[in-house]
Image (tube, rainbow over all chains, first blue to last red; front, side):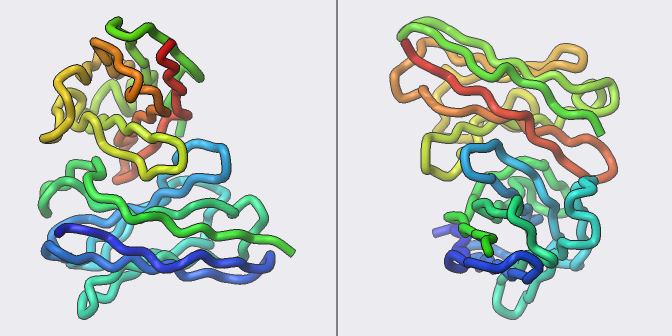
Length: 125
Length: 110
């Protein structure tokens, strides 16, 4: 079946980096944007960005909080998207989700129909 | 970019209807029809309920409907059921290939 499976929970020190993976199966990985969304404990959803797995083109949220710290990449040979977050801070503690765009490329719909199970990233000294 | 504003909480009795609003600006919701709504139960992954303002994915009950007027999008749930109690988030395209979520609304079924 169509699914996104993410890597396991991570615990990091402030200033470190984390790389979260999102493996797609059951559909053509290069046919749909992958978005990344995070949710801090007890807080709402926050959109981080998307990657076009076919071209590698990305778009990121215009949030000063993330400027230069987040990078989205993909490896089409293993149908996997990655989120890299550097210079971690305590307020980066959150569940990070990958989600598939509902629209078949080139027509993105900017809605998310398939979600990964989430990856808890804890930043603590 | 401005935030998308949702009420913090709404409530309704079983069988009744509730509407959750999502207010943006003339630069986002006011011009684009990429508005989606997500339901999230505690500890669960969000689920899309509405996309493209008013389209319902297969499997979503027709009690859920979406609309837009000016800079405000709305999610209406009719015939409220206990299982509808959850957090609801709007998400909109805000230009320059970027998206934004609203702050979320907690729905309580009385």
